[in-house]
Length: 129
Image 1 (cartoon, rainbow, N blue to C red):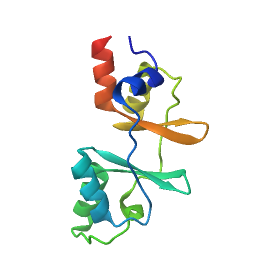
Image 2: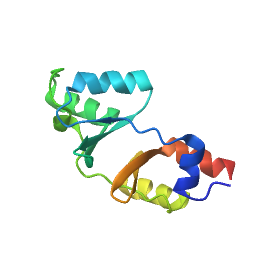
Image 3: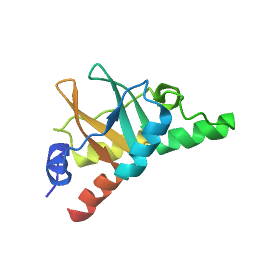
Image 4: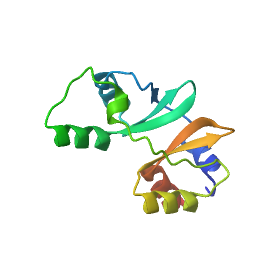
């Protein structure tokens, strides 16, 4: 039975896909497509500075009615990043995701990101338990 975020990471793996704030947005888009994922963690000097989701990209393009493939990720990313600790429960993830209306939570331990949990991961864990 999966009860904690750590349990979930053991099952799903701890793959973490990251970009830097100055990464051109086209490179981030290609990584999202290639890895078949919905978000990227934005790190600078091993510190979380943001999170970039497909929604962030689409909303920015729609708002500006334009797109420049060399624009840095920092222009598109969300800077308010909510995180979760590996010892927290799957229910804690669901509660935070619901309250904050987010779909991805970086898992942080000792100040360092160690994984990413998606809403899909949480739903699968709840269904399996």
